Length: 507
Image (cartoon, rainbow, N blue to C red; front, side):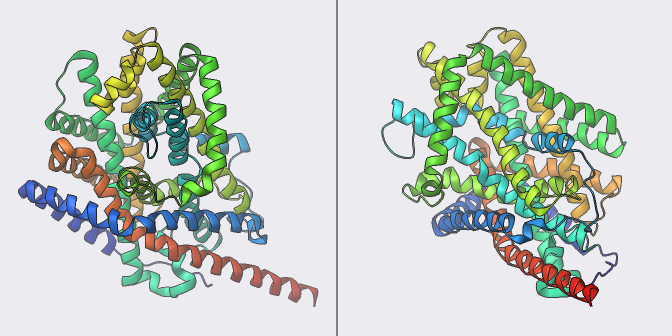
């Protein structure tokens, strides 16, 4: 593989921006029609290709595991003599931080309770339903999503740090198409990566803003409507865009630190007052159930309608986030071996997620039983309020409720700020220091697209968000499948080249 310098090209930016603008305008002008289109797209993709989402993620896991344990795992993400830029502790801390986001806050209480009330199989509201609920929640937030991110991150890190190719998804296809990564084929791949990122992140921002709005209504009675949610998104967009453009890095770092410390504080608080023994029993049993059933659950197709709304949506959401999170884990992993990278990225953040979900889910079930089903009733009425319903059963609610809103806001700002950077990078030829104007433009675009999805969806906003992720992820899922083959081919060539060099040196 030869190194080629990329020439400046704005095609990805112009095409992505134009299509984004058209999407926003069509959604604003033909709201009802777009809502119908969303419904048809959701039905077509989930009913016709749900099996492919499940099979693809299984393939990603097999490929990642095989690469990690094979001799290829020794290859360094960088030159052979490159050393890690961060200590193990710093690296682990950043991976843990990357595992904390809006989705985890949104679903930590809601998902276990919803599965308990409406399990994928069996009777609801039984001890068995509780066990299945936690096992399923662990499955959705455990190893599977982080393996997807590891594949995306591996492609970016390997071809950037070892082969000096642009920090773009298209670079991963150099072993297959060569210099065509700089032409229409490569640009198409990068454009699809942009759209996967846009709608994957928009889903998270939409869920986060919905939780903020419904939290405000639950706590203080401020009515939550699509307009209220849109206003929250608009205000938040102005804040993080101005911070990005004005270069307020310290403010953004402060928001990131606040997110981490608040997350830890909430975990400790809920563990302490939510029933320690019950939580520990729940975590222990759920981990056992999760690991025991992971293979069967990976391929399970027993309840198609349930899968469409849950597992298939999640897998699509994670695939849509692959360029986004992959970029983050790649940037902090230069100098690591592929084996280190895959195992750390797949296991450390997922381990954090399981502890988080075990604490929140265990406390939710314990407190729900003590309160006579109050949390279940609130969740069934409006699942965006599940977190606040649980906190209401704990001490210091007057303090923890506002703090939970602050945590969600911090997660919102962190995700949006990072997304603007990634989108700017993807649309500037892989420039790892994109301009403030480009980041600001994508910040505004992210806010606008999220608002449009909320307004188009109306009372079914979450389904609109789910449809956006599933649709955007579909072509990128196919790209990732081909990318797996391309990575393996590149690694094989890498090993062969190393052997030739050694043989030449011996002679």
